[in-house]
Length: 330
Ligand SMILES: [Zn+2]
Image: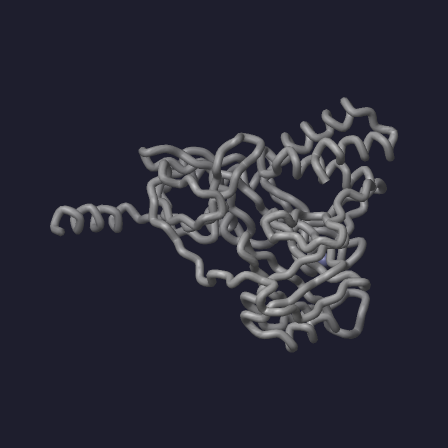
């Protein structure tokens, strides 16, 4: 569904006028400080207003066109990876929960399928490189703003003919680059630079304490996980910094453990959403030099590319000096 159609639907199905919807979208984008695109913000506003937004119909979707909060998603894709099984304790249940992920790919990208409890048996029946078809799935937003596939009760998974799904290049390639050279959406880069700024005005979002999915707030102010129902959410970090290497600068988004590591704060502080601790730690981070690996993503709010950090290392001043000396000696 196109953003304009979603706005139309919100106006039709709720008491909101069009300008009110647009105002809410603006607010959403400001709240997330550019972490969410206009389209994403429209989805979020629609979701909060209780409007059913996306359906893929009968046609199989390409991975690149799958976004969070879709219903009735059909795809054909190749199994790229099957994770080990993880178990977790459930508050309300004697039996432990089980979760397992399958990474699926086609010629446009990869997406994670999360399997819960008895669904995890599906993972035992597939192998890497198998071509599978899924119908009637739905998507949620994972903790890195990506769509994640889930199987509802009506979803079906089956093997499909090998020639129905293109071969997928496996193994990711990381390009060492200057920041000015970061140009390709979805490509992985390794860059070095100095942290010039840290945005601290809303560094937290709410996530399900059991599965880590982003939770939504309903009209009564309760937090709802698609999988686990009403939950008491944990706060998780999603923090942006500005990295400059002399050729240019880029916004870098750091989630969870990477943000914690950079700020040098512990998991408890993160879960509590201690904003003062974050502000205090952020001041010490400015001026540090880091080497970072991340994926480039287009930020629709700013109209620029930014990096989502996969990992980073601080560059110690001595180490850098060694590198410079090595360069001269070579
Ligand atoms: Zn959950």
